[in-house]
Amino acid sequence: MQVSQEFITESRKFLTEQFFPRIERVVENLSDEQIWQRPNEASNSIGNLMLHLAGNVRQWIISGLGGQEDNRVRQQEFDERSTIPKNELLAKLWQTVTEADAVLEKFDEAKLLETRKIQHDQVTPLYAIYHVVEHFSMHTGQIIFISKMLTAEDLEFYKWQQEKPLRNW
Image 1 (cartoon, one colour):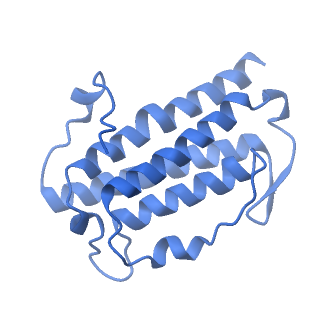
Image 2 (cartoon, one colour; image 1 turned 120 degrees about the vertical axis):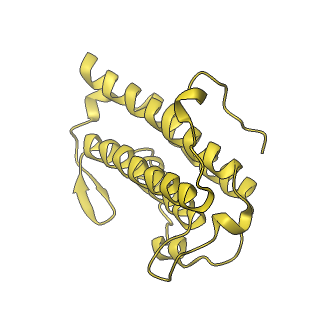
């Protein structure tokens, strides 16, 4: 079970120590208007992507593995057009990530290959965790890309790796 536990531990680190802090750094440097800016109606804003990440993590980890009720309405994450302040978005996403982290911390690795129904599919917890980490990574990259397009600034992530999280929101 050592490999199973390491998989869970590293997945938790990706979400809490790699991906969320990068989103936090990006969002802190943008205005609320920039966070909700869309190049066109076929594209998402950073705000929509943050809502989507919160919904995805809640559905797959907190509900799917943690047993909480799944009341996600996925399309609302993309349909949102109001300007939710960045501090509110960061707090919502961080709350979701920390709840998911708590679920994964307590998760029994012996159950990684059991089948569960998540988002109308039969999947294993191993699949669910892998999906969430990959999905979070993909949208983190999109958020970074959008930010670079808006600001034309180098985000210097590797300089920040040793710094403490911002969490001043």
